[in-house]
Image 1: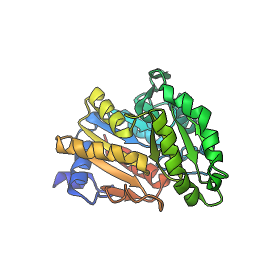
Image 2: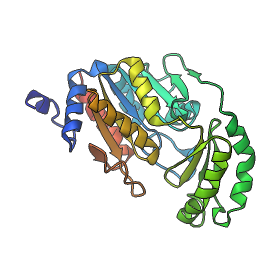
Image 3: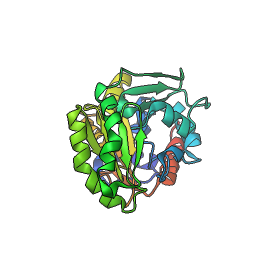
Length: 284
């Protein structure tokens, strides 16, 4: 790889040839590169109460250093866009004009340049599920302590606070799948969370659409959870179509699906922030 390899000095080296090619493409033409990142577990440490999740203190400075040097930075999250913006501290930051938050798996879009959120009408099944959700939880003894997060366009059961989080998670899968199916929704499992949301909403669809919109020539995607698998698959598909990409996993002990597919594994959000800072330092 010659000069490309020299350009990468100081950057962690992807373990795959495709990942190395993706990183080289970003370094060679950063003005066509999109840096896309999950929020919880990637930019923000996982906490028992999702309302208390906040971006790592170094995340905003790292993104502000990187964003002016690339085509765009996109935060792709299952949270409502406004919640991710608030918890991330992304609004009104110098250097983040190129930041976009794709909330609700792409159903919502917030742009730093305008400060506005655009979104279609909610799926009607969400309101029906909202009414029935508490009764379903009450019918499952193991779920005591499970907390319902209302995301507006989706609802999620977090079992991390239950007496036995894994038992609660397992016991709720079938009844919540039945509830979702009755109202035209699907269930997406995550790290001690089961989310009920409309079909067709996933990070892979959101990422592909956004990359097409901006005409991206390369992409780096970083995530940590099962909800990031579609985005990983989207990048893998784009690489087969000639768009170089790098897949980064912010590792955790609960989910191995991403680490096994990643070009680069880092231990936690602090390491993701360090990677972003280092990448920014390598770009003109």
